[in-house]
Each structure stands twice: as structure tokens, then as C-alpha cells.
Length: 187
Image (cartoon, rainbow, N blue to C red; front, top):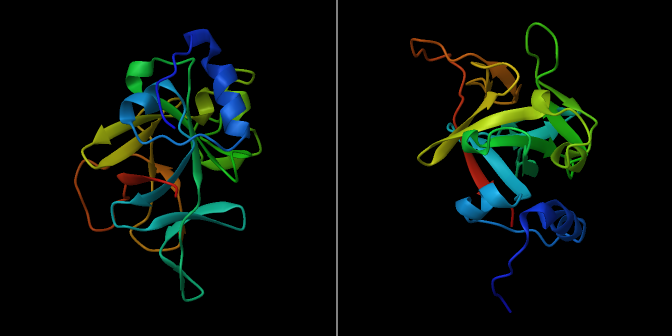
């Protein structure tokens, strides 16, 4: 059975948390994606390397021990405290129990921090260092740090290297970091 249900805007977090905790959130509509948090995606860079977790580090590759890697399930929620027109998102792994952070130092450093993604979504913890502005570019998206403008999620051209923060070089080179990603909803 499907249909439309109207939810008062201030009740969205409560309804979302109920459905999320029951594992019932699925969303493929980009419009709905901006209104109500989508939950599970897999990401590949534009060279088709999947993002996966190994030894508590997010890497980009395709094979591991001779087996094709399916890729890490990436939890995604919007950051409701920032301008929605900029598509601010928070990215988590391991069911949202760890989130990607740019840190708070002078220079950004990408790391996984043990913070629940729903705490960040519900606004119970400062979240700008965990937020990325998602920029759609046709089939791919880039993710710019909200805390460090001009710094983007990126992968190395070589496989099985850590995902990192990088600035986009003015001139393209064969060893330039890859900052474009495909987003695919989990099955």
C-alpha cells in the first residue's frame, strides 16, 4: 500500500527518527531527499572506485583480497541548521555510529569520529565540522566542507588509498585527486 501522508514540518524529525529506528526509510526522489533524510547510499568516485571501510579508515578501491568490494553503506542526513539551498549533508558509516569530520584545527583533516548521525541531525551536537555541501553535477556530486570552504572530499587516482580532503587544482593533471562521486541508493 502506498500513498501520501502529510506531516507537519516540526514533526519531521520525530517521524524520521521513528521510521529510521525501524529500518523503514527508503528514498530515491531528489525532492523528497531534500525534505526528509534519506538513509543509505553507496558511493563511487568518478573512476568507479567504491568507498569502503578497512581498519576504521575510509578507502576507495575495487578489489580486496581478490574479491570485488560492494562498498560501505553511507548514511546521509541533511544538516537542518545550515542553509538548505546549499544542500548541507552529514555522512556517516557503520549505521551512522561514526561520521566523517573535517576536524577543528587550522588545516582540515578528514577523519571518522564516533558520533551518532541522528544526534547531529537532531541538533544536539555542533555539526558544521561534520557537514559537506553536496553539489550536483549531472550524474555525479562533489562534497565541499562547510567548515573549510574550498576543501572537498577526494580520492587518489590509485586504488585502496584513504579518502581525504583536497583542494581542486587549477590545472588538471593525471595524478589530480578525484572529487566527483556517484551516489547509489542501497538495495
